[in-house]
Amino acid sequence: MRKALFIGGTGTISTAIVKRLSEDPLWEVHVLNRGNRTEVIPDNVRLIKADINDEAEVLRLIGDTVYDCVCEFIGFTVEQVERDYRLFAGRTKQYIYISSASAYHKPQAGYLITEGTALANPYWKYSRDKIACEEFLMRKYREEGFPITIVRPSHTYDERNVPLGVHGTKGFWQVIKRILDGKPVIIQGDGTSLWTVTWNGDFAIGYTGLMANQHAIGEAFQITGDETLTWNQIYKTIADALGRELKAVHVSSEFLSAAGDKYGFDFEGSLIGDKAASVVFDNTKLKRAVPQMRTNVTFAQGVKMSLDYVLAHPECQVEDPEFDAWCDRVIAALDKAKGEI
Image 1 (cartoon, rainbow, N blue to C red):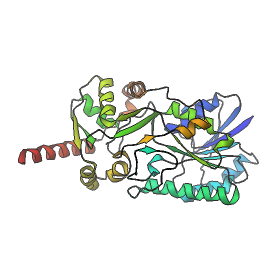
Image 2 (cartoon, rainbow, N blue to C red; image 1 turned 30 degrees about the horizontal axis):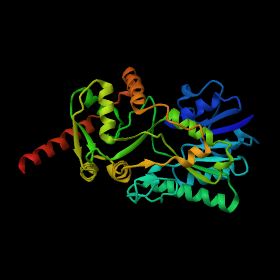
Image 3 (cartoon, helix red, strand yellow; image 1 turned 180 degrees about the vertical axis):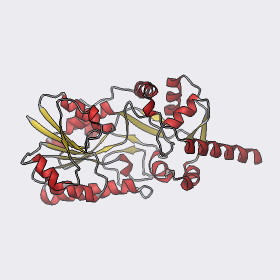
Image 4 (cartoon, one colour; image 1 turned 120 degrees about the horizontal axis):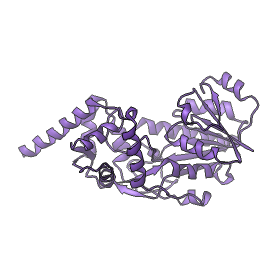
């Protein structure tokens, strides 16, 4: 039986992967984390409760186990992947690193993105750190044969998350509340840029297909769905699922970035460095390696499941009055400017 170790394992993406793999009789699944959200871990998955930064304790707990695959979901800096290299070099046949599609060059030269698209993002440190992690790991592959596979997700969501372009530091709920209350909501740009959102269960198909896959060693793969929408379509689909009218206010990303700075809203990274650009992904490489990869859940289906869950779980409804007031100020300022012209 193959053994897999997930570092993290309870996030938006990794929860779906752990669940899918736990249902495969060929795999024995281990999850290493500090014991957060244990309720989402399937009963037949072994929980290794530890802080991954405590290397001595991790080594004590895993003993002499050699894994077929180590899956890293919470590695954001070079120091963290260097730690993983120390822990798992010689202890795994494959190390899969979750990077990010936001690492692709901004602004990109063409709208269609492949794994060969240049990596560069001057607007977002998060993305630059991911690039640095990729470079370290690929160097270890080239020089020492460390069995790396890089995965670049784009906007992946589950039943606890609603994909949006513009929201505050406390998440998506305040925007949903504005739609429910009949208030206008801000959409970046003119809303016609293209975006790809992926249901986490569909993402899990592509990811698990790369595990113990010899064609994946030393390679990078982007994993996204095949459905591409404009931001106007995304917001309209959300409003339709709520049974409300969408009252959209379009604001340039540059204006939002400047207006959000003093309130702690990082729209330079999340918009100018990511969501302001049209992105369409060519998944040909992934589908060659994982022929079963396909989109099973459309956005209309997925966001309906998300909204049904969120509306039934008050703990997901985290209000953000500061962001709500900021939206009102931005919209009022634009209305005033229009009236003065």
